[in-house]
Length: 199
Image (tube, rainbow, N blue to C red; front, side):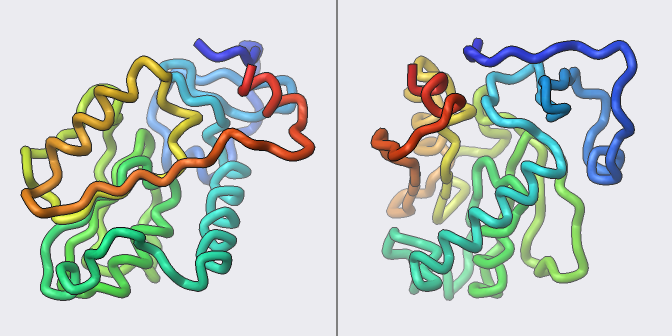
């Protein structure tokens, strides 16, 4: 589905602790650099411990650049009174954990294709559910006051975007907000992988 190649290995490399905790028997392949990729989904990036570190770094970088602002939609007052928030493609859960810490009366659910370990610092009003937005969100219609999705362009094929946006809208409550944050199409000093992705 994507223009990247990976090779199957008869003898898999030693499984890091992150994968032993998070990964049931998903079909995977390893690329030339030994990076783990799921073969059952059209996700461009690896799903391994190194990618988890990158996602955490990316989250803190965004938080710094945006000067601590986590939300663009005008939902501050709404979330202070309670309700539910859904973070689609939550990755490591950092964004959802921050939101749960800021809005203690709000229940925040992170959704991703693989489990994330619960850490002692994770707020009690944050929970995780495994799911794949490409197959539909496993929630009732109009359930969430605020639905958030950030930087999933590498995991959603172009033809699937209308379906995904429809799902985000379906689970958003009347007068609620759905927010999709994606990157632009201008890249400076793009490397070979970025050029291949854009081609």
